[in-house]
Amino acid sequence: MKNNLIVGLLLFLSAVWIAGFSLLPFLPKESSFQVFYPLLKISYARVCHQQPDKCFRINGSYFFVCARCTGIYIGTFSSLFFSLFSFTKYFSSTYKYFVVFSIYMFTDVLINNFLLEPYNKTSALFTGYLFSFFAVNFVIFETKRNNFFHAPKRDK
Amino acid sequence: MKNKLSTAVVCGFGAAVLGTIPGVKTVGCCLLMPAATILSLYFYLRITSFSERISVKTAMFIGFTAGLSSAFFSVIFEVFSTYIFHSNDLVVSLTEVEILLNSYNLGDLGKETVNILNKMSEDIIKNGFSLTYTFFLLFNNILVDSAFGIIGGLIGMSVFNKKYFTKL
Image 1 (tube, rainbow over the protein chains, first blue to last red):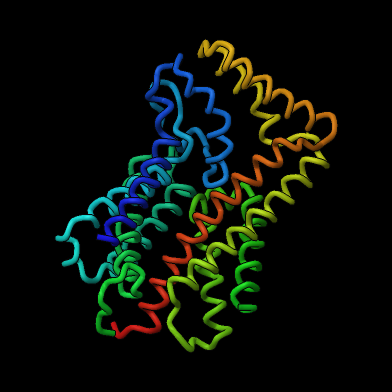
Image 2 (spheres, rainbow over the protein chains, first blue to last red):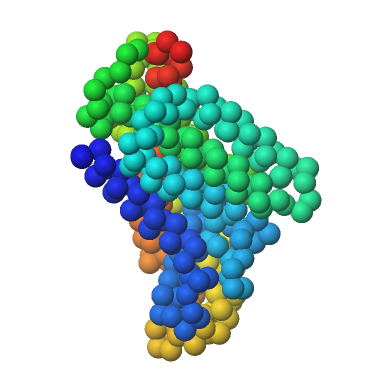
């Protein structure tokens, strides 16, 4: 129960974070929330380069983070969401997936930034999503092993 | 304690320096801070001769400290460069933001926001420093960097515990 509460809290925080960079383009232009535009743009600039050609554009406005970061954050959210369900306990070792998709993403970073022209947003989103999905899954599993979530200690 | 602090501060400083380089930020993106924390955890393990598993508490502490260090140093760099050039990202993008907000017809709220931004921009152009902008930047960087530092700490803990302290 306590595990689910912690994961639920993290899920809420990641949802707020995702809403922060993606919500404004979906709101009407007269909405008073649009005044947060400069504030949010500066805030998200801390964690992303925000180059327009690498960001998704909805209703004429760009997201505050690039396609890869969008994938990473959505992957984090969905991984946390799935970890609330009991069937994920059968994913006993996601370390290999984490390593594989890390390499996959970093290869895509190199190819997309230095070889491909124009930038492929779809592959950036996809590789970012897979990387963070398995990274978060792996971290949750290892954190449980370290007794942070009060789960029984597993064999070494 | 000293080992934890020193590795975290050094790597936080490294992240702040790298964050100012545009090319590095394009490639590193949001993974720069977590990567710095993972590196500081590795240095911590090297200093302690890989004697014991990293606990969640240690990973979070190192991540948080690296984030704080990165936030402080990056604000110092930003303030310093703003003071020298009397310009920064806010000043450069202000016209574009102003046009955008005016086109949204937000009424008094929009005008008030543009006024605040203009005031900060004027301070920067005139004196090379804006107290409001610096406070906002410091608050934002502390919040974001420490959160990403903790995430990096947890990823590093998971990787190193799996790699060095678990039979695969």
